[in-house]
Length: 302
Ligand SMILES: C[S@@+](CC[C@H](N)C(=O)[O-])C[C@H]1O[C@@H](n2cnc3c(N)ncnc32)[C@H](O)[C@@H]1O
Image (cartoon, rainbow, N blue to C red):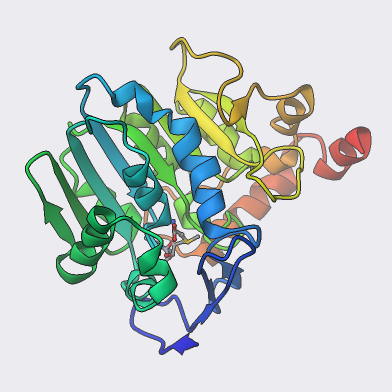
């Protein structure tokens, strides 16, 4: 199945079935699938819902969520499914460029059947109206470039959970820049958690410079275990166990990665550059920096 190209630049989208049976997509323009082959839903649960520890919001504490790159909606949908009972008051914001991933997902019977009726209703309301409003929960999906749309959320708004799920930094560097990540970090509420599948040294180094403390995510079931399966970042100095459900401390190998050329950040000073300009700028900075070459780090830890 292929959906026609549209103004939003994602290019043609192709169906990409994953090993846990959940439906996903592949973007021709970005040359990447939306999820890993082990399973879209699997990945959303392991990397976003589990380390979020939603039981923290079971005592009447409101929950404020920012979903960056909503796509087919898996990350928020698994959170909604996993809310403790009684459910906390929920305030949700989503950022997404292209309407087609959610539209296409909702045409799939298996996708629709995989959610409880209230969660499916929320996904359908987002598709139809870009928002939902219930007595104790409401959400707004801001369509457009996430860099620009983030600015439209009231400045004082803070989030308990930020789900950062853009395409990989090499393919979509504009959403992994020092500036964009600092903007996300600044929105983290006390006790808040930023979660991402990315283990990139550049991303981690930018998050650390933004005042966050880094933890490493554990693999999702069925995912090939590597040296890390993603990153959880919390405000530095806040108490959090070195290991918890779905995360552990950074290893020495991961710490050393942050001192290699791979840690040179993506930069986008005005928040408007295209990916080619951001990659060129980073390449020039890497070529002139004195950090260890990343392949010698790799050889050391092989
Ligand atoms: C890896 S997919 C996200 C998968 C999604 N979280 C899910 O659960 O299905 C990346 C998404 O980023 C969106 N995207 C790409 N560039 C963007 C931009 N500049 N601003 C906002 N969204 C963008 C794409 O449309 C795509 O839906």
